[in-house]
Every structure is written in C-alpha cells, then in structure tokens.
Image 1: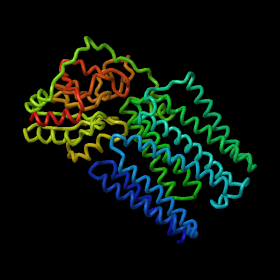
Image 2: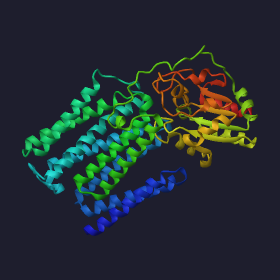
Image 3: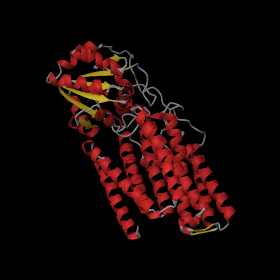
Image 4: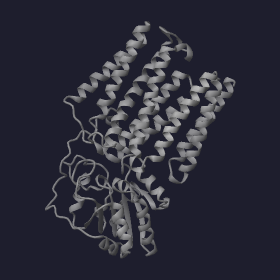
Length: 467
C-alpha cells in the first residue's frame, strides 16, 4: 500500500470518527454514530496492518493478540450489568494508559523499528513525544484503577485526604517535569532507560495522588476526565508510532472528554481547572443544614398510584438507585399506564445522575422510553412548579435542596432538579441514608414529600399493580 493511499484511508477513518461523535451527541442518532465509529476503526486497523505488511510471525502475534483481547472484551461486555458500566469504563481507560506506557517502552528499547533513530541517539522530538506519552499514560492508568476501585466498592468512596496534599502534588509534578527534561537531554542508553522508568513511576504516583482525594459524588466527572486523559495518551502513542489515524482518534477523544468534563463541572458547580488538577472533591461531608424535626411522611404503593392517577402531570426523576434495582422496564410500564389514563409524563435527567455521563439516558433507552419524553435539567427545571407530581426514583444528591438553600452544605451551588417545587414529591428509596456525596437530603423532610421505602423495582411494580 502506498503512503498516499494510506493517508487517504486514515483521513476517511478520521471523518468517520467525527461523524461518530456527532451521532453519539443525541440518542436518536447514537446507533448510527456507533456504526460510523466501528467502520472507521475497521478502516484504520486494516490500513495500519496492510501498510506495515508484517511477516508471518507478526501476523500470528497480531491475530493472537486480537483474539485474546477481543474475546475477553466480548465476554466482559456481555456479562457486565448496566449498573457496573461506570467501573467498566474506568477499567478500560486504565488499559489505554497502560498501552501508552508499553508502546513508549517499545519505542525506547527498539527505536529502529519505529524509525526514530538508534539506542542512545533517538530523535529529540521523539524523546519529547515518548516522555509525554508515558507520563500521561501512567497517570491515566493509576487514576483509572483507583476510580474503578471506588466505583466498584473495593475502596471507600469517601475522600482520602493526605496532609499537605496540594504541596505534595505540586512537588511530584515538578519532579516529573524535571525528569522529562533530563530524559530529553540525555544521550546515554542506560541514562535514558533509567529516566524513562523514573518518569513512569512518578507519573503512576501522581495519578494515584490526584484521584484518591476525590469523593464519590464527583466520580462522574472523574470518569469523564480520565476519558480525556486516555485520549491524549492515545494521541501520544500515535505520535510515537507515526500513525495519523491514532493521532486523530486520540485528539478527538481527548478534546471531547475535556468538553464533557467542562459541561459536567458546570452541572456540579465545580471549577474546570480544579478538576484537571485533581483538586476537587475533598470537602468534608456532613449534615446538610437545618433539617427541622426530621420527621417524614411515609406512603405506600397504593397511595402513590392514587395520587398519580389523579394528577394531570408527572415528572419522573431517575437516579443510581433505579440503576441498581434495574427498575427502568417497570418504570416504563408505569409511565405507559399513566399515559393511558391521560396523565402527561416526562423524564428529567440531571447531567451527573448515576456514576457516569449519560448513565440514565442509556438505561431509559434500554427500556425503550421515547426520546421525546426525556429532558435535560435546563430544559425541564422550570416546569416543576407547575407539575402535580415529581416521582423521584433513586436520585438523591441531584435533588437535594441544600445545594440551593444552604451555603454551609458541601454541595452548595450545584444545580439541582428542583423537584421540591412540585405539588407532591414521591421519593422511592430504600432508607433515609445519605447519597453518594455523604450528606443528608433535606427533601425527605419537606411537607409535600412522601417517602416510598423499598426496592425501586418492587415498589414500581406494586404501583403498577395498584393501578
């Protein structure tokens, strides 16, 4: 394959990746976006293999690697429940970071294979690309592993605060920069290799230090941020390999992840710069303001069915509790029953509901909830004041009025779905326990709130029977 033909095919793949991102921006076009992405990746992979024309041993290793990796990925993807999707994404991000480290190591130990020079005489720009790639990759790896552990419950979701953590982070970051400069300037084979692994170890440490202080409530932003990091790590691999398609893909993932992180930061009232530097999520959680006499009004499925059947409008607010209970299909059935009774039903999605961007949208799409019934926070928040019933199922922190009313609350300033302004709030929850942010929800104790205690799926199924 000629270089010109390979360049054209890589350009086609890049255009398809852009179309994929555009398609994924809306549920109605997401399936088409996935197809564009898969076709683009197939073109890029075949072009890379054909342009390289490896010998028979190389082909055997490539096929074997694809079979092992693809097989494991297929099995994991089929077995993983939707509730575990956030930690699966975090785990996959860690593999991208690890791949960047291995590719950079391969380029350092066999530069001739990459056309970047000889051991001890590697091109200066290649050394810069290599150093940045391994640093970002190693940081992404440990950061993603810790995010996975927190999301999967293998590690406490509470912020782990180290004394003087900002000073430590700055010191480690400065050390990383110094090591990169020394690595680029070194012309000794032993020196370059020693500095390379020193950069790797320091970056691995920095990744852990950045993510450990972040609390569970900020995990959706962490997943988005690590997605961006993994993209830049992939772009670094592309520069090392001289692969245009990988550079384009990595840059698209990195930039789109950064944009998504910015959007989510606005949704949580976080500083974007603070997120990038890992300097958020370390608040000490506590009770959220004055909770009055802390008495709640408890209801049953029959009460909820009666209230909603006699309403003219219902807004459903899904959260992670719905995902855990896998209640989305029962919820769709409940909504269909209400519509047959002439009730207007809409769904309100907070940008950080669940534990990863778009978590609730995916679950509702899985239950075949019509796209036109699903609204984002800024499009539906003004409607709660005119709504008869707000049906909250498993969403906690994103509906907490303390974020709006209590300046002493750790989540103060975070935009919320203002369900408390509805005439009646039906709140499905197992108990009065705090949400992922670790603070009490003042919504539980408001006069217009009725708590429906129990498993979300069973409660919704009981409501459907009561209809």
